[in-house]
Image (tube, rainbow, N blue to C red):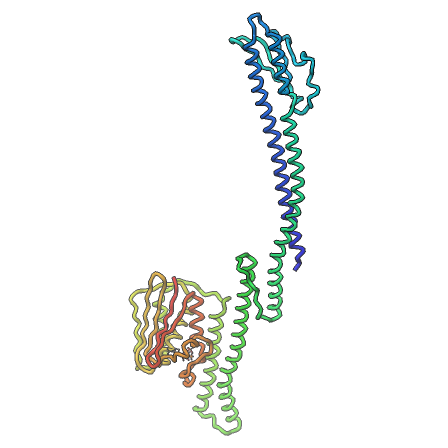
Length: 449
Ligand code: ADP
């Protein structure tokens, strides 16, 4: 795994996010400070002008002018607040200005606000314009303060940028290690699996991250492959075992015919035919099983009446049975509908009914169907031989045959119930069995809604 690649990408993304956010904040703060400070200065000047106008109004003499000491005091006040003022009479002649104080504002540092054009305010008393006040801000302490603040803020921001970049580097290293270590482990185990070693598993931590989920999925995959591998090996052994007996019988018969030991009488040929039929049945069962167990094979999903499927399976089975000693009753109170694959569901009930017939010498077979809000249950009950409790856990396994079945010549290859289980599970259902030896068996097929 290219650990450096992941680290580099994380580092780049973390650093660019940190850099962009910091630059954005700096830009925003500079902009806001400049704009809002300009507004503040304007408002301040308005307020100052208001005070001066009040003074000018109240000190206006009936002779139509202002006492010099008042003008001086006004100029003084303005200068103290870093403004220069000029006062004009009603005719527009300048009668006073801060310049008259003999001390210009040259000493005051200029700034953008200092070069701002002056604002004129009309001096109005009793509705009559008595003069004009011209006021100009010279920039001062506040402007300086503002500038200093921005300067300091920008310096600190650049400083913190260095710290943030260092932090982003360490953080991305930490994250990259956290991400790449489990990925390296997953890659290693996937490699082992490719080489056929399915025994190893990804060690999962408790955190539910996507990487953990990939690990979990890989573990599931390993489990499934291991199970498939086991089934494949078992299947080969089981098939070989199942083929051996009929093939040996056919071989010995044919050799005996060839050597002239036996005549090819109808009886002897019938034995050979039976063995061939057993092989044919085995191949057909294997095909059905592999089709039912193959997850790639799509079920045909159609809406169907399960009662009809069961009726058809009864017809299929009873048509082949000649056991008069067994009565079969289908207790159907209601029509039950579900979505499923008709042919495969038919196979389920044919297999279960075949078994019920096969393992019941005399008595009855009862079929029931019911439906509630959670699902559909079909029961197949017989009064037959029952199943040994030791055998019960294995009867749904491929090629498992109970003692009785093994001893019987007509017994199948032990695939019937494996097919039932595979088909029912492919429909999302379950199949269970309850059985008492010599008392009978009850198979329950459940399909959820
Ligand atoms: P088989 O071809 O042997 O019938 P199955 O897979 O259909 O294979 O069944 C597996 C085993 O389960 C049988 O060998 C038999 O011992 C037992 N079994 C299945 N159904 C019944 C039943 N209705 N009554 C008694 N035993 C049964």
